[in-house]
Picture 1 (cartoon, rainbow over the protein chains, first blue to last red):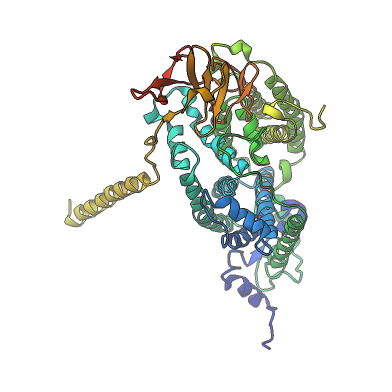
Picture 2 (tube, rainbow over the protein chains, first blue to last red; picture 1 turned 180 degrees about the vertical axis):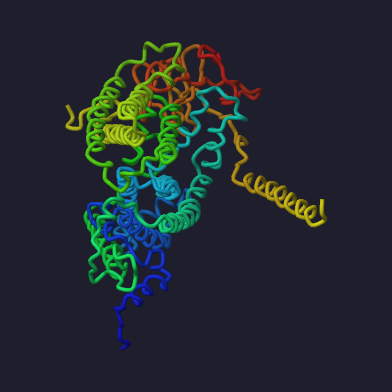
Length: 455
Length: 145
């Protein structure tokens, strides 16, 4: 039996990282501050762990899944009831996918609130946003594959959201939405062509793009000197050496990554795996009746992370399904362009004042969003004959205007782009959460408002 | 201009042009050829459809209305986001986002802003009755029986 020799000297520990293909994406030395659990909560590593779990479970599901309209639903039934361990595998894949969306959003919030997009980390932020889009595309393409009622109607609705530009009355040949819809569906309606396309996206295009983008995300982060840590703390760091500092290196504020970073990451991976395994054992992934192109479920609800958008499109397809999501995405991309105040970067909420602004923004955003939902129950009879005006005037657009005004107000009051960004991010996040919660629990038959306890 | 510089420009220009041509050709591949499918539907014997009633034709996603004077056909696809409408007392309602339409197919409330399409119903020379989806008509137009 060959003996396992652990690297002990500083040189060996440096080499353990830099000469290993899988470990060399880490730097050989790190700022010990990044290991504080309440600084990052390890969210990025959790997301990567889920991605690995999804790749493994997805490859195994591919042994049995058949991407044809006639066979897809029954191959899922086979996986669930015939293949040994198949039900468990599908549960694992489904719950990891939900977790992936949830954790990626939390990771986005963590990076934003600690200001980690500044000090030359713009490209890390942009590649992260592209990864968010890829994660959402993964989920979207993935839930067509079972070919059940949820799959069919969610994709029909989403394709028609893209096509909502027709509400502007453009001629067909310059209508960008119609073009996107046709590219997505491979035809006028959801059918075999759509399933083939989504299958290809889900198992080839998106995994390859995500692996590439992840690689870029990590590489760019290393080139930006690792995670964004607070400046003043680095200068206060003591010169005292510990077992983790490199005696031969002049910078005594850094630790050797081996083994502390590897321990931390392994622990997070194992923890993540334990949680999704637990869910997979306990809860079965839902599967509705086989897709019926003549009869949508009532209510036809998409998965939780798209219910915010579904609530918005129930006000207006064009402004709720295209304009507001694009504004949100553009806003996220523009944050590093407009905010250059990096003195407090690396500190949660940029300190006490930022935390107060965050809490104030929550207090402002909650009643505003609740008001929008209350308004949405009003009759639109006043628009009779001028229904196209609802594109401009609806609860979604009004809420967006209020939120933008709030961010401008905060920016002017505190003369700070960072605080303005905090205000806008917070109100948008609260709006997203309130709309999502409404979509999950407060919408019933025909998407009418209803109390979850059934009054 | 030196010879090398000239050749460099030629090479660079060729690369850009060629790249643009190839890219635009490749981008055409995912664009489907659509609209070729038949949008004419036969409806069979009209006596199977009850009088003064909207009957749903599942394969076609159309509601067929028949009364003593004649028949007409309205699209069952919600103009908001494409769900299939269900009958309600006063017209049609959408299970997905709550749009409501009256019996004339007009958007009454909810997020839909366009009225439903009424399709042309014709009698072929051989006597068969066909719904032509590509031709829209007014809600009053009946094929007299």
